[in-house]
Amino acid sequence: MKTHSILTFSLSLSLDSSGPPLCKFFMENRCVKGNDCLFSHDYKPPKKMEVCKYYVQNKGYCQKNDACPFLHGEFPCKFFHTGTKDCMQGDRCRFSHDPITNKEMAMAFERVCFAILIQQKQFVVRI
Image (tube, rainbow, N blue to C red; front, top):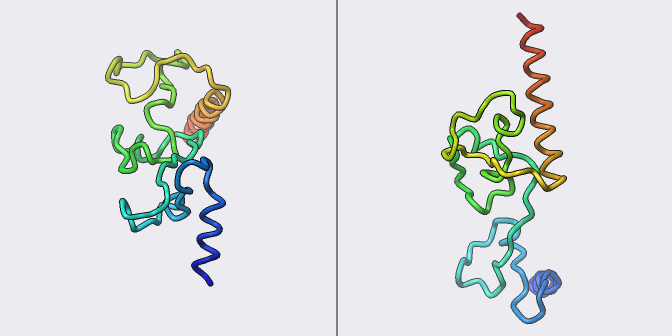
C-alpha cells in the first residue's frame, strides 16, 4: 500500500504528460537508482539569487557544478560593476562582466554590496 501512495505522488509530479513523471527522490537529491530509475531525472532546480560560498572560497570550484542551487560565474563581478576598483582579472574573472538586466540578479548584487559596506564600516569602528 505504501508503494502505491509513493507512485501516486510521483505521478503527480510529471510536468510533461508525454514522458515519464519526475523522480521525487532525484528532486531531493536522494535517488540511488541512477540510470535504472523508471522516473525522469530531467529536472533542474531554480537558482537561488545568492552567490555560492564554495564557488567563492574555492577559487571558482563547486562540487555540485550545474546542480548547485546557488549562482556561480553568472553572479556580477563586484569590482567591475561598482566601479570602485578595476577588475584585475579581466577575461580570467570568475564573475560576470555582462550588463545586469535581470531585476532579481540586480537585487542580489545590491544585497552583497550593502553587506560589504556594512562590514567595512564595522571594521573601521572597531579600530
